[in-house]
Length: 105
Image 1 (tube, helix red, strand yellow):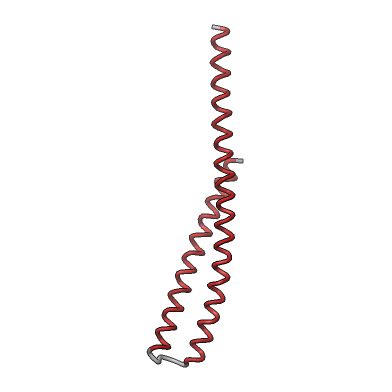
Image 2: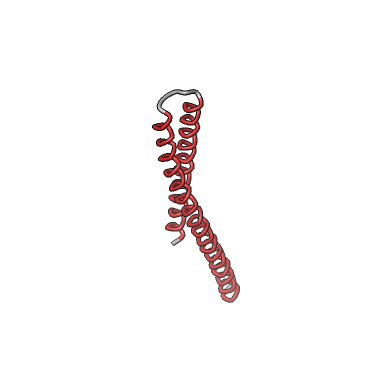
């Protein structure tokens, strides 16, 4: 179960990195199109339409990013709990072995 949780955390971390990259690319494209409008490069109505499309994509990406970050928090907590449980079991096992050895030594 720990390995499964580790894979989940890694997968979510990768998804978040990809969404953050996508968000940056969308912001850069919006800035470029706004610059084109300011410089009179191209059809203003077409540029504004494209900016609106990109802003919709940006909003969607932001929602996905928030969702993945929430899921990552949950997955991180679960992984931490599982690791603590494993550590606790290891300590109990070690302690039990030591008591058994001392009884039969």
